[in-house]
Amino acid sequence: SWNMVSVPAKTPRILKGIKEYKENSTFGHSVNIKESKVSNRIFWLNTENGVPLYAYAPIRLYEKNYEETIFEKEGIGRHLVQTRENNWAYLPSPIPEASWGTTHLNERVKRYNNEVRELFDKAVKLGCIVDTKAMSNSVFKCIPTIAFDIDEFTSKYDLGLEEGKAPNVAEIRRCVGDLRKLLADKLSLIEHADMQKYYIFDSRDDKSAKENFIRSPKLIELIKEEVSKYEGIQGKIEELQGFLHNLDKATRVMDEFIQAMYTETICKKGVVYMYDKDVDERTDIEPFVNLMKQKQYPEFTIFNKFWELDDKYKNVVNAKSDKRLGELSMEEGTKTLYDRILTMIEIYSKSVEELDYRRYELDNGDELYSFYFNVLDKLKEIKKNVE
Image (cartoon, rainbow, N blue to C red):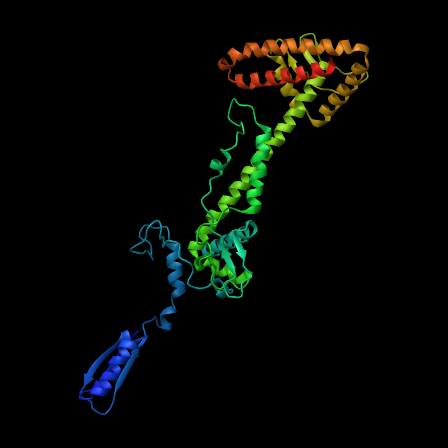
């Protein structure tokens, strides 16, 4: 605003009063004092800077032109001080979405606004935005937390997930527990986290909070970072849980495989290892390996074929294996069972010794070594139980 006062000449008291107003009034700095030869009146002119209403008439055309040139190098609406941090290339619509009705539509802005509303809902669910229940118009608050790196956090645990190392199940479970605790207790707040700038202006309810959150680009960037932190934690928990699930499955399938082998439910017939079905049995399971084709480490191929069996066929093999184990266990002295386990220990021990120096020459050498080593370890445990 700009104001001008015309004071009659030779009226020192009036002039003094106006000068005192200029010095002491809140809006006095905008007053310009002029002396006039008009002696019988005071002129006071107040002006306000603004855009006249008629200038808004073509605003929809301006918006259309802006949207059509947004990706052009010299598009309409570029700012002289535009930088990577202050990007003026994606301005919001000058017409509030609530006022669009059926006569106006901006797809880019609508899509962006919906994305921000989804971000708001996600942030509330994760605790990045909270309802403070405060007795004011600004109820919803963004929660700023300290920097957090999920990889740095998990590096403190000896998970054993690196190639060539044995997974540390206990440590993986401890890490998952601590990550869940972190999700429940939330990350530590930054200093001065309760400053007014973290409150969403005029957020008296959920609807108004979303709409005013859309108009707060700095809070949007903050919440994107906060949501990313918590989604990183959730993702790592799912990753580790999936690994544990697969590990449990691998352990179970390996136990079933070993049992099928020492009960000779999977046995060698000629040069082929196959399911030992009864004469009257109709189950048709393909052979597991042909020793003429697979001359080295056939047990690994048998295990992989066993892993890939349909559950229907795997259940058939396991049922017969369990039945035969019961029969072998009832045998006096369990000599047959013991001898078969010793034979397997001898075969797997030889393969482990061989792979200890050969694995580096083979494409899947580490995988082979790990398989034979783990099976041998389990066979030794079974031997102790049988003795």
